[in-house]
Image 1 (cartoon, rainbow, N blue to C red):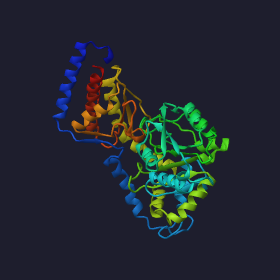
Image 2 (tube, rainbow, N blue to C red):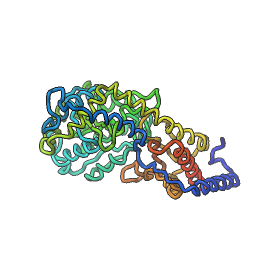
Image 3 (cartoon, rainbow, N blue to C red):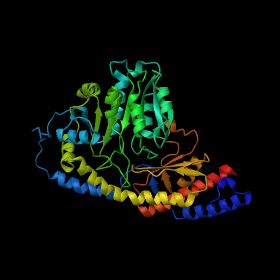
Image 4 (tube, helix red, strand yellow):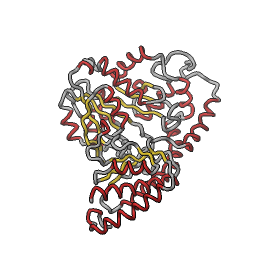
Length: 423
């Protein structure tokens, strides 16, 4: 196919006219499709609810340790739940703390602790003159929101199929004001990249200038395969132990997209030193998180294999949705030289890069025709995409039929925006 940049003036005019007519026809359909967030579909929630109904029939409220989970106590969580997440994350049970329904809350709480009281015996970040975080871009808007809330300056580092640009990361951590980084190492949000083993080892090998440097290892999609081949992610703590850097990493995950986003359970994994500090703060903050919910989840999914079995059912629901989007992108944009994308092995997103720097205009056209996308620019700190190119596509919630319409509209909008940028 001829690249759009190679079109003659007459060819470009005909291209615009054709796609303007298609856009008007789609707009006239009165679509109302929301692809703004990576939400589980009603079918997935119904599936989880069937498991929950069985769990609510449980009459034994005791943990395997004999503890009555209806009562006060167990600050770090129910033993069965700790064992499940220890197996999932490849750490010892003592290095797990169970949380409530949101890993995001655990991340915010940890950053808040570092900000107000410091970590590792260091001065609180709020009392230090300059505090920076590495922002892997494009990335997760809620990570950036936490840093922005606390006034932490973000320094962009681009991502590729192997992970963040490690040459740049290794250079940045020589600066003692760089206190950490947010990252989604498996099926990154939004690109769907999984960090290579070399990248994981290089991260673990780093000796940052700041003794209070911490990586927020947000392993949100650790078991969220979409395609059978999937991706493998090396265990960061295995490499961290090899290089004596365990304190540099705090790992987070949850069941928000396994059971219910508002009623799942979360966990963090960390070194002995970090666990001790976090528990010291939690002792003041909370008596315990929802132990009954932890017990329910552990009884529903007593092993990682049981979790993976239910996730295969999720994958069967997600796969045709990803296929619908990816097939439309290839059909409509393949070969035109105006956009690029990556087929992820799992996760919740497809990332589209509009190479003509006209993503905002494409997003505006979609919105006017009834398609709500993640705000263009939101995948960068301060909602500022310097190249105006990234659009995050969230295929999980709409039906396949809706996705086909949404993806067609998006492609037509990208074509019109690109043609205007090139004219």
